[in-house]
Length: 391
Ligand code: FEO
Image (tube, rainbow, N blue to C red):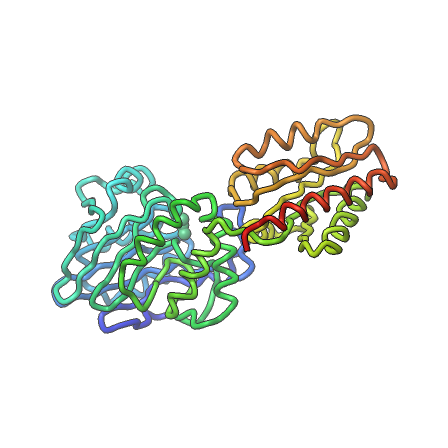
């Protein structure tokens, strides 16, 4: 794709990666992604903001073929999908200075092997004149690495936000418009990448709210030309508000745990509590992460493998602990063969979840009426807690 004009002297560069299906060898990308770079040409100086993943560096190389001079290369974030192409850019433009946050300097040296002499750090709020355009560097740490920053172009009312407010979506459209698929992809991205840093997300949202912009240009996905949509969505996702819903990641080996999960889902439905089942051999991890964004309760369902949790449940519990969703309540259910330590094991895996345990329902073998009654009681307890939630 050729450079695309956003404003006079401001162009999108980069690569749309339609075919990528996995990120970090972990995160599913059902809609592909893009690696966005931006070229800002002032009357006196020119700056490139970020680069692309080395996988598609040839696209950036073609876009820069006719750009004779770069004065500044701004690295907002050092992760490879944006900064991996930076060494090539610095080689092509030997006089260009690399600008980054102080926290990023060591990461640029260690991850990209750039010599320290090429690097100039920029303070929070520092400005850089390109002549008739002025860039202001806005430190936005922990969205999602400690060194991340955004860049504000006042004259054109554009905020370049890097990963923050981005989405893994491949599109031939330059702008998000009001396409609901973009918000869906942005929620998935938030859930997988930003959710562990909810407090910092809120702090950074407040900080960028003080700026006056019409466009938010992230480093993944389309450019937000209705900024309120993504800002409001982020403010909701990162808030303390939880919904009247229960997420149930589970495995069943011979059907008993499945019976228990199904009974609980039906019991919750009868009590007007929404339940989301995630059978872990077939679950899209991103869908599970999205459901965790605002669920009030997590119920983990596991059979017992020897005396421990099923490894896929173990993995899901570890992931949930890493993502630190804002759920307030939890429970553990499952069937076992002759003995089990599932509860002790899973409880030990989720110390980051600040949840009140609402109980456990374990069943030796195939569930009988007594177990189903215990599940009804669990549904009662969940409903009672959800009723107390602020509107
Ligand atoms: Fe898109 Fe954290 O890199």
